[in-house]
Picture 1 (cartoon, helix red, strand yellow):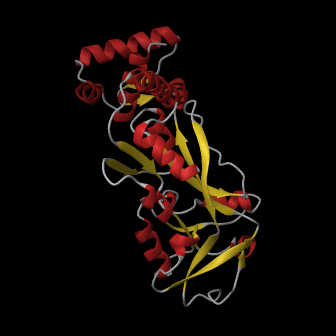
Picture 2 (picture 1 turned 60 degrees about the vertical axis):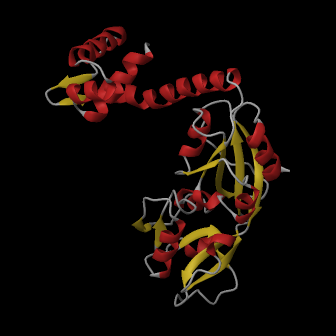
Picture 3 (picture 1 turned 90 degrees about the vertical axis):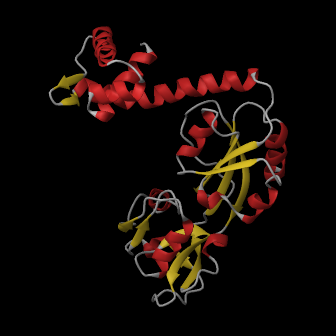
Length: 286
C-alpha cells in the first residue's frame, strides 16, 4: 500500500472534502481524486462516498489501521535520521504534566531545553517520530510494575521514580478528615475526568476491578492547576501524585492505601541518547 495514497485518503476523510484536502496537502484536486481512485483500485473496495464525502464501511476500517501505520512509518524515518545525523545542541523533552515533578525540573540543563507538555498518550509518539529527544510518561501502577505504553516504535523505557498517590478533596468534603482512603470506597463518588492532566479514570477502574468512577465533569486540558481548582470548587474528585496534590488551597490530600498503587514515572527514548539527552537520562534514572 502506497503511504502517499494513504495519507491523502486520511486527509480527505478527516476534512470531508477533496478540495480542502488538496489545499492542505499542496496537491491539485485532480491529483487528490486520482490518489483516492488508485487506492480504491489497489484495495478492490470503495473507500469514500462522494456526495457527501464520507468513509464507507471499508473506509472506516482502513482509518482504524491508517493512524498506527503512518505513525510507524514516521517513527522509522525519524529513527534512521537520528542515527545518521550529527549530534545537535540542545534538548527537547516531552512530558505528561504530572510527570514533571521537582526532581525532573531540578535535573534540566541550565540552557538549551525545549519542554513540551503533552497529553499522556502523545509523549511516546513524539519520541518515536523524533520531535522529542526524551519523553516522560506516568501512570498508576503497582509498586515496581512497569507502565503499559502504546506500541508505536521500538522504544526503551526506564523507571524514573515512584511516589504515593492522594485523592484531592474539598476541605468541606465528608471524607476530608480521613487519614487514609481505599479506592473501592470512592468508586461511586463524583469524579473529574481529566485524562491528560490527572491520573485517568481508566487507571482507577483497572485498579478497582474495572468498576465505578463515573465522571461528573470532563476536562480536556493539560493544566494541573485548572484540575486542582475544579476539585477545590467541589466539581469532582481527582487522583494525583502526592506532590501535586499537597498544598492546594481549599483542599485536603488524603493518601490512598488500598490497593497498593503508586504514581510511576518512566523515561522513554529511542536509540542511544547523546549529549544533553544522555546526561538528563542518567540523572533521572541513576
